[in-house]
Image (cartoon, rainbow, N blue to C red; front, side, top):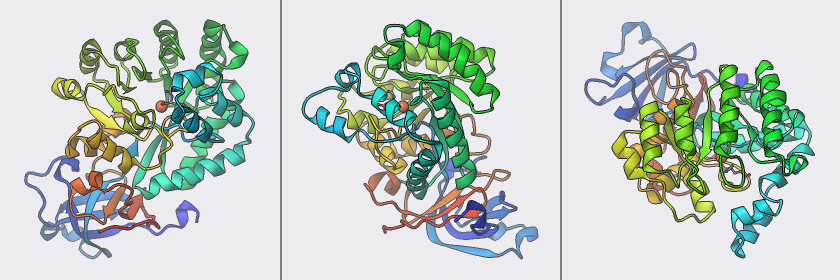
Length: 418
Ligand code: NIG
Ligand code: FE
């Protein structure tokens, strides 16, 4: 069904349970019997049902059936648009090869680049649409999608154009990120700096001029790009007025997060090997820490990101799926929340803020997304659970009951659970 064919969510939503931390501005006291008014696709009012303003009293009623209400979830780090899969590498890793071994042997990201270059835009759109539908059934209403499986102008453009098309087709907010500096393409073997020249001069300005780039990312790692090369890409982004973010400290401490912070990055992501100096730099710059526990899990990492230090420093923490065919083939943001709690020892409140409020902040869409409040577009989820803890507790339950995206009711086909 086309997105505009979904019914309007306008009316008074009542018999719901709200999460006080996710209402903005925070109510003076927790709402006992909340009601939420949607008018023309926008949240017009949120408060105690007994205090519903007369202006809304005649509107249609939607009975929430006692469901838990949260804002629509925000997946702030994904590589959703690609062809093929890497199940073969999964088998290789089980047999003892590491992610780095496979990358150095010409597999890894490069293998998805080959598949994505060879696939037409329509097919990419179809496979990415199926993935997006699964993410949305789990409550996602805004998503970041990176390029980085093209590594040439035509294919990076193809990925970013598909990402834009997904937004219109599915009624979801998509923020695009240009990740041309994801790995060195084979045609530039041994010429990393020449490839960075091409990223900065041939690709980024053209794609930005075409309106395809909302932010710029780099993979700063031993098997990818150095700090100096990362900085050149960041400088090129600054010239174009584009914000930056970084795949930082995933496999080793490259000092990438501190570099990103110095460039005012929106976020530094992964961070398993983040140092104390990196934490301090992120705190000073207001850079969000995006934690990706499903990639940690899939690679069977053992080096935990410094959650306690990030918490102590007050660095905002977000949690994302990192959906990609190499290190994180999951399509459930609630599973990432579960792993953030179970593997990273984040609290329920932290992990829930991580997939809502702080994820929106990581994408700089927090004025409109990640919390509920009057004046925001109506993006929310009613869940078949009684408490926020249940969102992180169940594994693979898919408890979303009613999904409202951009003012339209897109009921979940997958709702199960309590
Ligand atoms: O976020 N680390 C770099 N990029 C992705 C993995 C991409 C891939 O292996 O295809 C990540 O883990
Ligand atoms: Fe990633």
